[in-house]
Image 1: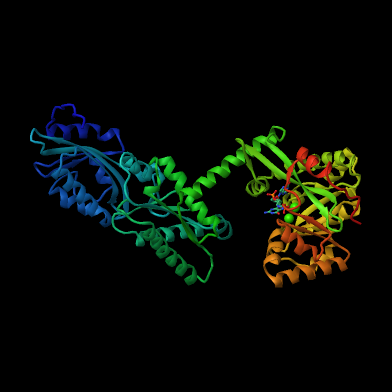
Image 2: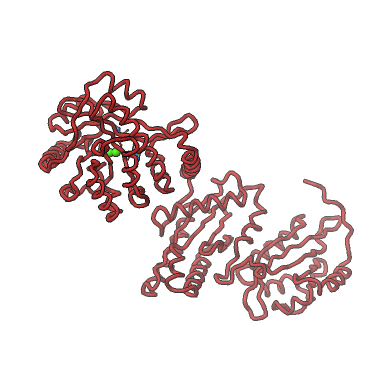
Amino acid sequence: MKEEPKQELLSVDRIRQMIDLYNPCTDDYLFVLDFENDSYYISPHALERFLLPGCYFHNVSDTLLRVTCEEDRQALTDDLADILSTERVTHNMVYRWRGLDGQPIWINCRGRVARGEDKRALYMVGCINEIGRKQKADNVSGLLGETSLQTWMQGFQDEIPDGYFLRMGLDNFKSINAKLGVEYGDMILRKMGDFTISCVHHGQHLYRIVADEFVIVDFNGGTAKEAVDLYMEIRRMLDRFVEENHYEAFVTVSAGILQCKDVQDFSWSQIMKLSEFALTEAKQLGKNRSYVFMQEDYDRFLKKKKLTQVLRQAVASNFEGFEVYYQPIFLSKDGSLSGAEALMRFHLDDEMVMPGEFISILEDTGLIIPAGRWILHEALKFAKQMQQVIPGFRVNVNVSYVQVMKSDVVTDIMDALKQYDISPEHLIIELTESGLIESDTYFTRLWTQLKESGVKLALDDFGTGYSNFHYLNELRPDIIKIDRSFTMRAMANEYEFNLLSLLNGMVKSLELKVCVEGVETAEECDKIAVLPPDYSQGFYFGRPCPRADFEKKFVNSGTVSNDIVH
Ligand code: C2E
Ligand code: CA
Ligand code: CA
């Protein structure tokens, strides 16, 4: 330990004189606690604020406890006892004193203990400030605020305590304010504060941070399970409140739980970041529930964040890193090559990222609009080149519901067809059913316009989610693409196979075409041949590959098809 520089001891009387001298110069309250005489002197203007018997008094411990709010008395007693029984020289506590009107006032009391030769505590000089005045506390919920939490946390940087942070956020709080008014919102916050106060245990600390969030800190070895139980207790109180108020406001609360042991860098910013992530996860998992922080989830989140940045950059720098793979599609009747599906790939640090990982990011960020336009152009360029060898070659391009809803995808398609001089029937646009339900009116408009233009339409991923046979007759897609999961089920289960067979027959009777996806083995191929579908696509016939490989593998060596979907 570092040796403290020797300081000259002042007499308590001299310190009292100095306090009087400083009294008019500050809003804070200076004090001296004389351990030897059991007396206490505080700046006289403290009497204008707190329920003190005078600015000078004896019997310090009892008097101070009387002015201290009940909830904080034990902590103060413990701290004073600790000063007397150890060699500690600093005192730093945030707690509540009673004001003249009996209401609690948050204070931060910091002091320095002067010790004699024998290390005995002689006196303590210090300063008390009202943190509420500095917006360190929140007068709506009656709780301490974020800055107070931050200041308190600074003491724990070297040694990570054992326990947890329970960060709770009201769900959809903004809409409560909007629908029922800010005063109603404040009342809910106050209630939430009250419920939380009544549930926290001795030694746990409670703060209200950003608008609608509350943090309970337990550094007493509390476990994640205990944090969940505590959250559930608060949630039940809130539920009861909502019920008693006849659902006037339907308020729920979510919680993110962060265990101290999971925080490697125990800094304020890191704790805020990780606890915020935990709360956001809880909300994303459906709200009104808790989530306990897990490093794997956080790593995945960071990876996604990085990928998002990289994708944005790549789109901005002329799609550098993006590549198109082509998977062959064969005509079942004679095994000839009919065309290819264009599938997006992305290269990141020598690794190939698959669409499963990045398409949803492109959709969430809207980047699918430029990226979708880019792949459309690449695919049509490719088709043009292939048509030199195979005149009827068709290319399939996937279009996302985001493109349908938020861009003029029909114009993009028409312009691109013109630019590469490709006739519309050689382009097949693949759309999924799930997107279809979400974007009803946009979708039907797009569908009609494309149909009129002569572009072919494929209903992708058939057999997943809510496959709706009713669509088939109404929409009359040119092709139904049976999803790999349906194909797999049909391979493994006779009932499913019969279903596939029935579907195949029905689609044919509607004069639509069927393409079976995900055929991986010769055995599967034989089984499928019984149906047979119009087209087959799968690893067994050919994996998606770059353009040059495609030409080598499937064009220069195989038979070709001039069949066109009518
Ligand atoms: P999808 O449209 O159903 O494309 C077929 C997917 O099945 C491709 O996965 C393909 O590699 C895979 N596949 C084909 N045959 C087999 C097989 O026999 N076995 C197995 N296990 N898989 C097979 P990929 O390339 O990973 O693409 C996944 C999904 O990402 C696509 O599913 C599509 O929904 C989306 N996607 C890919 N490229 C684009 C694009 O340019 N735009 C949009 N909007 N979505 C795209
Ligand atoms: Ca597809
Ligand atoms: Ca598909």
